[in-house]
Amino acid sequence: MNIQIFGKSKCFDTKKAQRWFKERGIRFQMIDLAQKGISKGELDSVLQAVGGLDALLDTASKGYASLAYLAYDADKKEKLLEDGTLLKTPIVRNGRQATVGYRPEIWAAWE
Image (cartoon, rainbow, N blue to C red; front, top):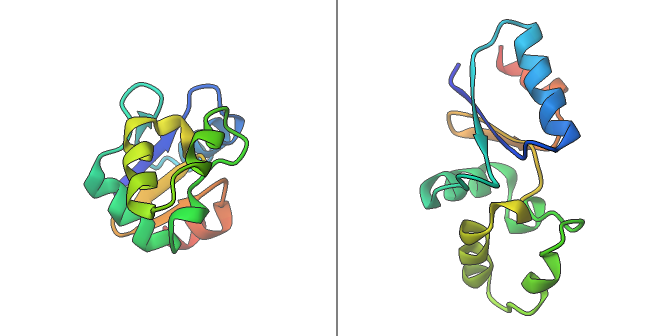
């Protein structure tokens, strides 16, 4: 398994996801969205896996209102690439598979 966890350092669910993988001895790479963000290729891969842009948007984030003014998905995607804090976390990737949020029932099936 090649696990990547995209999250925010202060996100409770991101910390729970890290703990879940650590408890099972599964190695993972942690990417802090606030510091490094997400690349275009990674974002496209996650979008295909989770079924679209709406599943990734964090409606509770401070900057969510700025997305309301954008009419096109391409513009919203560019905004997500600029500001990783607009993404719902944690985003957990295993190759072409991905989940958004704390989803241990799906991660267990990856083992």
